[in-house]
Length: 88
Image (tube, rainbow, N blue to C red; front, side):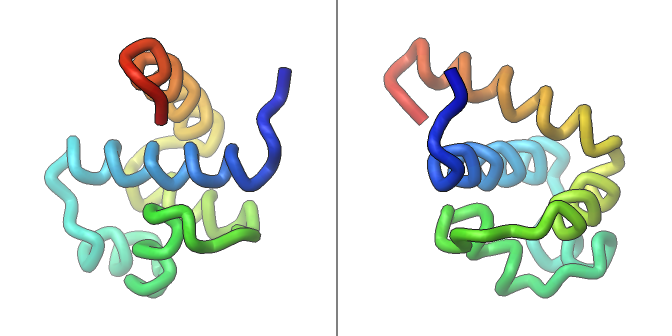
């Protein structure tokens, strides 16, 4: 079962934040590496950006040093782990 698009974007944002923090990368540094405005990254990570272009998520994946499919796979894994503990 696929989640509602807004719910999935919240999960993607949380996953990006977890990956960024896990790599010790600040929002500012990711902004520079991905060529995405820092304010946009913050909104995505907080789930405040209802529609995020795939091109932006692609740039963030590149800034995190991973292919887009790996970012999405990692988000799914993180969601499952958090979901089993109490919800993401």
